[in-house]
Image 1 (cartoon, helix red, strand yellow):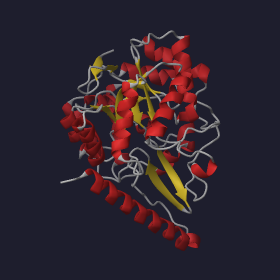
Image 2: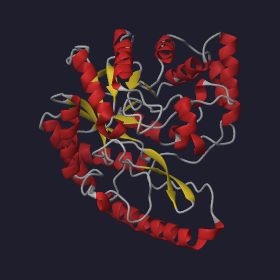
Image 3: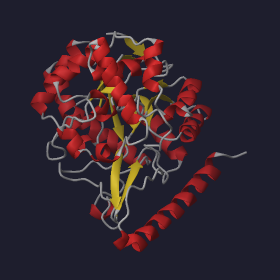
Image 4: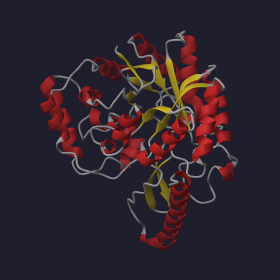
Length: 400
């Protein structure tokens, strides 16, 4: 297992990182693995050399963190060797069934008793890391990241893609000072960011550097063979700052691991899979991945991961499976190489597509004529509020 530096920092991570979103309570999602099965996956990963684990307080409302912490204790994983990464931003529910995926007005976190339990305020950052450490049974985490959440939320009869990373309600000054302070307090060793616009990352990183605060060392962004919009602005920005790229969903939530006509439990229940990755050209890319896998006598997942590992901008992709066999396949893919011609062949059908990630991305999927007027009014109000927020952030952070 190769180990690589995370950006310009001295921290070394395994060439692939084990994601743990799939570990939790099946009441959250039917494809989640319970504690017993999850520990088997973590053991296989560690025995193969993977010493970097990514989780989040949001995943199964903290159950993923609890399971990872239990695995570290049960398997006696050496703390001075392993790298534990967690994330914060969104609400961590007090029970497994709590979820705020509905954007119906009047039924959000604050209306349900979760005041100050979302976002990147100083209060939430300190409370969040405290609770994460309790669940993980650790004294510190190696990398604390500003969370990535990608849901298809329903507002009336619209399906809208919303991501939560950049906090428009909290001043950047407050967020970056709080992240610096949790490092200084010893709760965290490094900090990282997740999916946002390049200008947002630039403003936050530049503020930290100019004010001698702790800068980000990593960006966990959305990047795969069928989603390459990050190549336009984010990747050059990361290169400029010497920040490591640890993309989430390098296998496109499993779409790149199977032929188009195959379905799984996750594909039947994952809202993003039902509504996302519909861009023109993606079907042809998937077909070419299948074709190349047969030609090279390897799995489609190995082809897709080999492509990700071939990109110089990628430090270590984050992978997660619900099958030990599939996890071993991904580990076996690390030394595999694609030729320049094969990479070009896979990339050729790609076409520009809608951005999935930053919070103001609104992808309208369908509209019910019966509620057009009410729904349109809500969207107009959201757009107006968003414009005011962006304008305020722009004036605050770009002072000439």
